[in-house]
Image (spheres, rainbow over the protein chains, first blue to last red):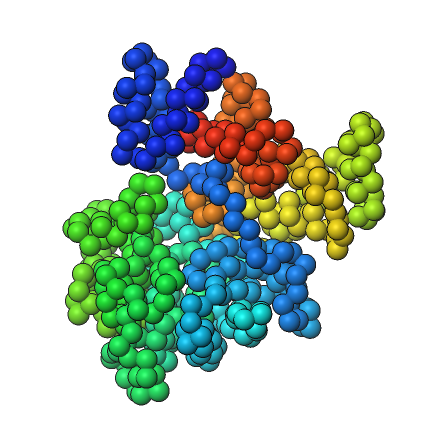
Length: 361
Length: 190
């Protein structure tokens, strides 16, 4: 390709990309008489539509609301670090304690009730005390809104690690046990995460897994199994469904359970499903329902309509059956909660050297 | 350049540079590059195990450090980020090349995928060296377009700011970025 050729191709490509996806091919067919040119434009279109790389390059600029240096109570904003799950997240400095925190500025709630509910839920999550759960430190008001201040966990997310090669099955089981154990703790307290995904899990400096964002956890409509004793306190919110909760993007389509996608009632088993996707992704190196181009609707359709793709042959049989059980389409086919999943994973974990030693093996 | 420059320095340097002083340009580059290197290194030291870097986050932090608490003229901001973009690219490429020599990659060990760069909007991350090569190849076809990508990717400039920096309309910037995305995706896919 030379500069003149690229100029021609670029003009065609730009016009094609301005059109809806469904019309692009027809446009290129019509616009390029020359077969060679057509093939080149088609190749570029295909790359554009099927690769997820460089997504931010041409994305619309959306300003973060808080500029670096802005002060929210005693917290000084350092940098925006992400968006999603109902708000913008910043890395901030706690000027009193001289430590870094993660500050999530919640999106404006549509009603006062909803705002109250979200703060109440963050307070509930703040009661959780488990080494696998990033701690909530504080809730502060910003004008009419709330910001949740959480433990800042530097280091890789599970999503970062999964970009390199898939881990060994033993690592999948080990990380899975840590994940399920943390979620089990929340389930016992009547708290469902509702947005479990590798991007919400980080490896702390000591290598242990930390689950983020329990501040946005929703109380389940009904809390089955081991969490029963804790439900009485939370039964006031029974009857909520994902779609009635609020207008937020609830969850992340690739990791959402069928009932979540359908806006039906959700409980601990929704988290079990999401953990099943995470385990699948760790074991197989890819998500089960992967759709080109981050299309949320297409992902939802795939989750609801297509059969579960098989795991690679080299995934051990026991691990495979645990993962598949998590991914039951109906909640009653899955483990009841995080604790049941943790126990299932523990039972297939290779005995630790310590256990082998104490058992005299 | 062993002393850390204050905001006065950088603002003055920017002003002189815009008036066409070559010494100011050299010094400015050195100051910005030094700051970026320091920041990138400290990110890696503090945030073990190594993680993917977000160049725009580093450039932002450099901006805050070099021009703290100061109402900087808007053009200055765009110019600063324009310079920082080129420097950031250089810092990341140098670092990735050094890493390539002592490569240890794995799930448990100290994985230093420093040659990978996170996408701010959560897309796949990208290998810096591959992107650097692809961008150089694009520059051979269309230098302005490659420059626009550099400003955007390594400097985090907004579309509006790029428009001012390169003297083209926002819709042109957008079009150049979209078609460059297609070209780079195709190239990176190999």
